[in-house]
Image (cartoon, rainbow, N blue to C red; front, top):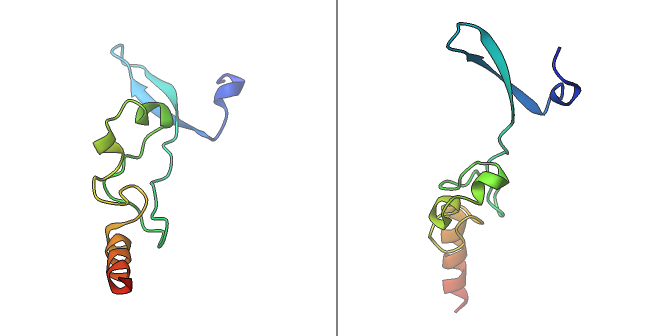
Length: 89
């Protein structure tokens, strides 16, 4: 029987085969959901899907794309925004 703290459904069960031939269970936290566009809600490309403590170790280019509004808007919404801004000028 696993420890009470490991009985949570928020933890993933990973079955690992040991060198001795036995299969043991490792418990890991689930990955967070993918980052989404602030305007249309589409999944953002080029944004890592990791735990906050792992995101801290990643470089800036891995956390978000380098284009304007990278990590906030998808490329389609970004283009629409710039077209709209150009029309208003």
